[in-house]
Image (cartoon, rainbow, N blue to C red; front, top):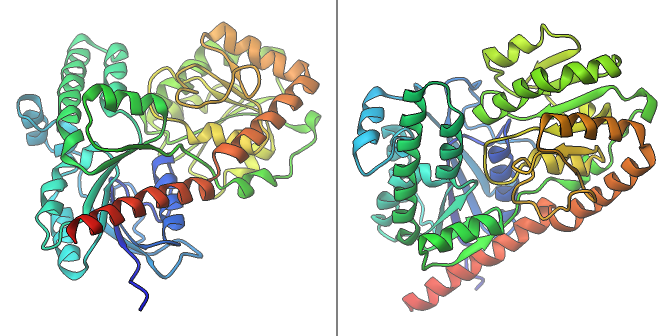
Length: 414
């Protein structure tokens, strides 16, 4: 008799069936690939700003890829801010520790024997004891989309007001201590880059750490029809526009770089694509040749009209799916070092590195003025993504590691 497929429980900060940001795309794409090897149940918070899809799955989902949405309610609680400032558990973890999720996980663990549980980030670390208390506890894996304390520390350095900077710095240090404590409470970790793996090693991790890079559904982007070179008119930035790193990136670019570009090439439009644009981002739409779209049903037509994708990020972590999308779509990428951090891509070969506003301006001018060189770069970038960052390949590799973990635990139990 063929043994049943292993069962995997994926617990995420945001419900991913209808993704609008990089982490959600990663959860959905990897979950769909893992469903070829195991039964997958995704449980995610449905945030207050999201339209309510209930537990509606995405189109063309597999029968053994189940979706469960958990309403999260308000964005944060004052008591969590106070507790996070003085207790062991940081605010960011308290902020995602909700009764609704505990009740849902308790019910699911009673209904189903899960062999593996994956928490999508350290913010969900407070659910580990619940998972360990199940009648037949699953192996527990943490997927690190970023080193969260590093992002918060970088943010603290540029935050407005000394009180804000001091609180963010304090919170970053507390979060780093929590990360160090958590690493050996689990059975395996998944990170998005060798750089992040090195951080966990520095933390003293004693369990396996697997690198599964970010990716794209390569075929979905590689077959785009582009306008002819002379007809392309967009300089594009894509991302969740309620995320502080993205807000800072586009507002700084719009202020320091875009006026010179617009003066030299008035036919171009700086197009900011992404969900929930903040007030500061929406205000940019009043500037010359700047468009703020909000969430769009499909980002690919915007890539098809783009002369370049800019990534002027100065804070953040992990690796940027938006860079990989642009590369797969054969759109030239201009990025800061932090924007391209964690990617094995080579500056000058796969993208243009530009860390200052002046370098960003010069890079965009060069992309416009040397189409032959730009074409060579975009072709090399597309091949790089195809070889290293296709979700199908990455999902298969993750499945091998998870199945090996399950097999080792099964043999150990016997």
